[in-house]
Length: 364
Image (cartoon, rainbow, N blue to C red; front, side, top):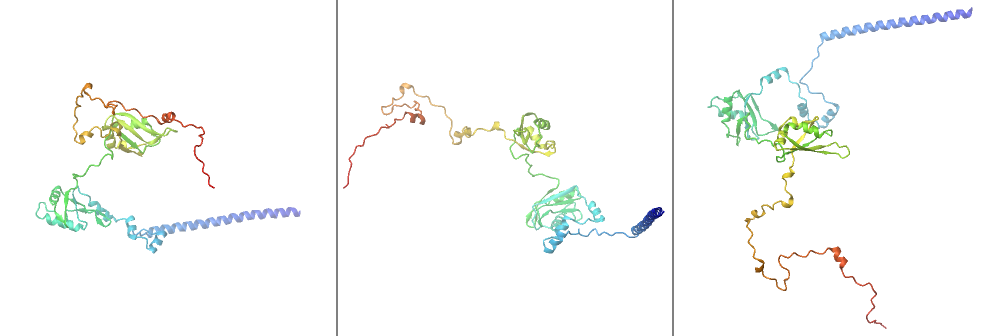
C-alpha cells in the first residue's frame, strides 16, 4: 500500500512541472510580442516625424592611418579633396550642362607661361572692337588653359558662338601677347601636325606579330590576317618539347600592302582576347652580305671612272727574265707547305752518344 501511494505522488508532481513550464513559456512569448509591437510603433513614428540630414559638402571622414599621418604633418588635405571631391549640388550640375562645348572654337598656341585667362580675354576683346562681328567676353563661353605643376602648357582653347567669330579671332594670329607671338587657328583644323608612323621599322612585305597566346596556331593566324592580303608563308616560333607557340611569329605577304593594311586595321590588333604587337619585319631577301657591301660603287665614290682593259702585247714581244729573276710575272706562286708535312720531312739529329772532345783541366 505504501509503495502505490509513493508512485501516485511522483506521477502528479511530473504533471505539475510540465504545466508550470508551459505557463512560463506562454508568459515569455506574450511579453516578447508586446515588446516587438511597441518597437515597431516607435520606429514607424520616428520615420514619420524624424528626417536624417546629410551634408553633401562635408569632407570624407579620415581613416585611423590618415589621422596619424595628419598629426605627423605627412598628409596633404588639398590632395585628398582633389582625389575625393564633394558631390556638386543639382543647380551647379544643371549650369554645367548648359555650358556645353561649342562646335566653333579656336586654338591659341605659343603662349607665355605667365599668361592668364584674363590677359587672353582682354587681348581678344580689345583687338576685335573694330572687326565685324565684335567678340565680347560673353561670346567666349569657355576659355580652357591646361596647366601642369601650376604652370600653363603654352596653349589654350576658346569656344565661340559662330564661324564668323572664329574667323575674327583667327585674324589676330601672329599678334604679340606678353612678349610672345601667338599662333591662332581653328580648333577643328589639324594642319601642320606630323602623322604618327605606323611602325618604327621601314616598310616591308613581312609582318612581325608579338604578344601571341601559347594556344595560337598557324591556321588561326592565317584566318585572322587573311583580309589584309595574300599570305605566302607563316613562320611561327614554337617550343621543341610541346610544339606550342612561343609568343611571336612572322607573316610573309606578297607585297607591302598586306602589312600596311594590318597595321591600320582595328580588327587585326586583337586575337584570343590579347592585344597584339604589330611591326614591320626585316626582309632578308633585300639584305646584301657584308663581304659585298660597298664594293659595287667603291670606284665611283673616289672619282674613278671604269675603263676598258688595254690590249696586251704578244708573247714574243715580252722581255725574257734575267738569270736573277727566273719566275715570270704570270707564274703562280708555290703554295706554302703545311706545318705537319714540314715537321715530318725535317732532318732529324742522331740520338747516338757523342764522345767528348776537349781537355780536362785540374787545379792543385
